[in-house]
Image (cartoon, rainbow, N blue to C red):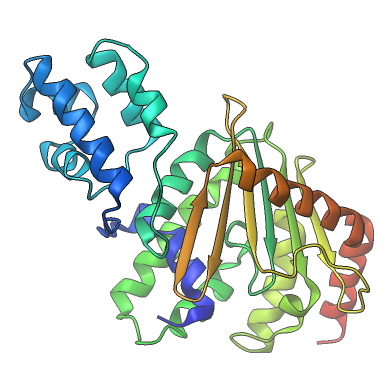
Length: 288
């Protein structure tokens, strides 16, 4: 896979059936052993416990062996099934995640579906939720090593399905800040770029969607370290997701999330206004 397309691939991992599991860490193993101990103390087999947490026996085994990162739904259902002591919730807060695996984006995608706000900064490509179908196809056709035709179509279908978030969640604010150079690339050719420059303004037109462009001629830039995603869950907890060359990281520790949120808020003040951003897109489109 090309480094530039890593985020694109990871974003559809949840929908495309990628089966990667995280490399086990000490905290994952400890949490898993804790779950197993509570389950056995309650007199439950994995077969009996699995439907109570809405997972397969195999997935429960993977969590108990420290090979899979549990999500918040598992923790809440396991708490209810194992006595509601609060111990699993507290232990879940101390889990550490190994970077670089698609399974973590599956957890981000789950959080994304119930988020009450979503923020994205991109400096590599058009954000996934705003990509046109032609642009999507160009991304997947540039994968190295190449994807099969079937894989390309599957990935495109999965991404288009994920884009329903923008249409189906009109009360959730979506904020996008994108580097100007992204829109000046001609990935897939001039016609694909024209279509993309028509699609992005249309996708960002709803009142709950804000698009700002970070101009090339900028003197200040709060997110030089790279792309960034932020969200707030219905419980008020904030998460961040960052990505590099062939690695990604889901961040839940407030000590790390707060400064990233501050950086994004600062970037908002440094980027063009939504109106000026739309005007710049029109000028880029007109110059093609």
